[in-house]
Image (cartoon, one colour):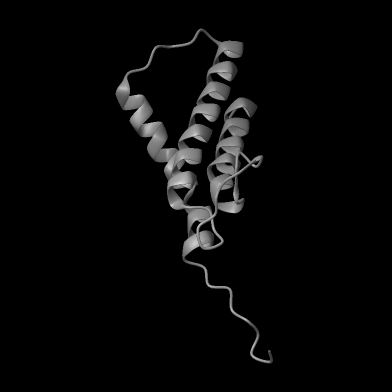
Length: 105
């Protein structure tokens, strides 16, 4: 694999999990919190925006190595699905992982 592909996958993995790590949009903008946590709709919106950022980064990488190939909707549906799969670890930690207090407390 070329370094561009590995860089793109690493960037996609990190950015797909960012909405579930921070209570801010794009790590900068504070949002109104509901019950002390960012609402899932904000996380979904941020996930879609990060998908666009990663797509722009992928286009830039492609333009550096070869001419940009036009894509149809199937390509974007597939890459969005891959991006959602990459976001699964952050989703699991945010919503399914239970942080327990130690027994001695």
